[in-house]
Image 1 (cartoon, rainbow, N blue to C red):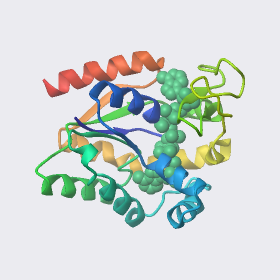
Image 2 (cartoon, rainbow, N blue to C red):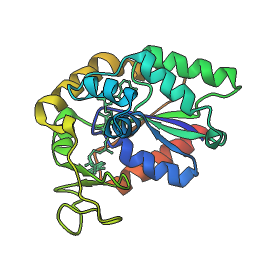
Image 3 (spheres, rainbow, N blue to C red):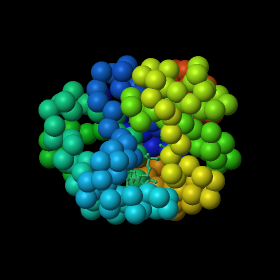
Image 4 (cartoon, rainbow, N blue to C red):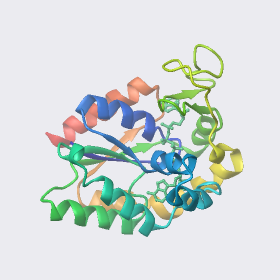
Length: 217
Ligand code: AP5
């Protein structure tokens, strides 16, 4: 299964990507997570990406494309992958298509999680994540059992630098100006599958799987 998860920040791409990766037994590849891991390790890629991420801007296409195309050459992607946060611009989408075509493949679907801007702000301001195992929590809708600690591994939960309200607004602006065009791009290729993301996680997964079954026949 070769899937892309599209949608604004906070739509639930990371949450649903983890669930769908388990369902289809393929790797979950998140460009945001890869940049954050590099930033934490203070690699040259991480230092460069941080300059853009901390102000809610997109990392330049050439940096992201090289990183993702490299990742997709790894043998664990032979059966497929779930791409979360890539592509985010038309040049990124075209680079992905070219790579897949050169390997004799194409995307099975692009799942577009639809959610309105105000819900995005509420979700992101309350998000907490685990730096140890990547688990996601929400202070109101999915808090950890013990305040501030991951249920799975006990690590101290963190709030992302780019989850303050002004930066979330900026990320939303960039989504509408640079990324939303991909809905039309993938609608033209017949790969777009829209899924309403404004429901509990389990229900969104159910909707996504039902929509994928209908799309793939
Ligand atoms: P990235 O990490 O990809 O961030 P994003 O796209 O802004 O998306 P988020 O991770 O914020 O949200 P999400 O949709 O994954 O939602 P989540 O599941 O966490 O990218 C960060 C930055 O990296 C970018 O701004 C850019 O600078 C750079 N970057 C990355 N890729 C790039 C690219 N291709 N090109 C250029 N630059 C790039 O859920 C959010 C919250 O809601 C959580 O608390 C969760 O628990 C909760 N939640 C989720 N689903 C539900 C639900 N159904 N009901 C209730 N709560 C829910």
